[in-house]
Amino acid sequence: MINQILANALPYMPKQLIWIFSRRYIAGETIEDGLSACHELNRQGIEVTVDLLGEFISTPEQAEENKNKYIAIIERFTSEGIIGNFSVKPTSFGLLIDKDICYSNIEAVVMKAVEKNTFIRIDMEDSQCVNDELDLYRKLRNKYPAHVGLVIQAYMRRTLSDLITLDQTLSNGTPLNFRLCKGIYIEPKDIAYKEYDEVREHYLDDLKFMLDHKMYVGIATHDKYLVEKAMDIIKEKNIDKANYEFQMLYGVTPELRSSIVKQGYKMRVYVPFGKDWFGYSTRRLKENPKMASHIVKALFFRG
Image 1 (cartoon, rainbow, N blue to C red):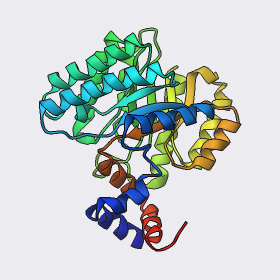
Image 2 (tube, rainbow, N blue to C red):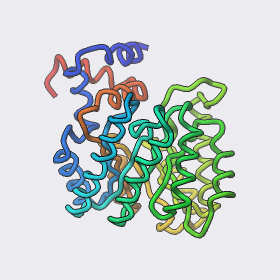
Image 3 (cartoon, rainbow, N blue to C red):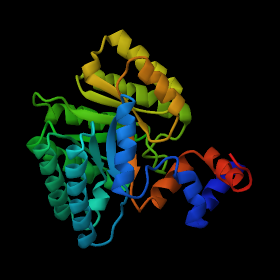
């Protein structure tokens, strides 16, 4: 209860305070910071997906700016030989302003990815965005099947139905490519599973469906129970290593991440950077309120 109160209060405190928490989970504010973190992960045998922080913009000009930033990021990261791909949030490209503008902006980014033979992952956002982001993915997948993927959130009640529809309508020889996560946005009970064990159960149901239907799956979780269950499912179904990978957030559960890598599984780390780190950080606090107490301790105790 105390941790939850702290987590709710901290977003209203000075940004310098939140940065004490954030610096562990964000590569930095600049492209050089992002590159440095990615090079280090690559040296450890870990691939990356790169995210420029920023979402819920208010003008088409901001969307255009984000498009240009992403094109420059793809150019720079691929030219430096980073082993990885890129994640985009449609709201930062204008989804809530004009859907056509958003599509045009993200398509330009995907076209750059095609040019550089890399891959774009469309992040799934809160429930107001789900239908539009599914539509966006369908359009881009039909044109660029090998270069576009999507995030799927297991806690949404609609998810398995969406997977069935996507499998029936988009399978065209190139495997569908999804990142499967639990989901972090605060949603009402009528559209999202709320109980911890319930979310876990549906996560595994979704994973089994994806593997059974020959989809490529990024198994994105820091939950040791889900990691172990996923490994059991992979062994039971004799899934080839070319058909899945594990994924984690930068700075989160590094010991579990290391153990997965040591067992020979492919790992990809989501590396966020940029000046708009505040919203990302406060969502991490809401997802894991225990971190709030660590921030407060850091104010008074060294180490």
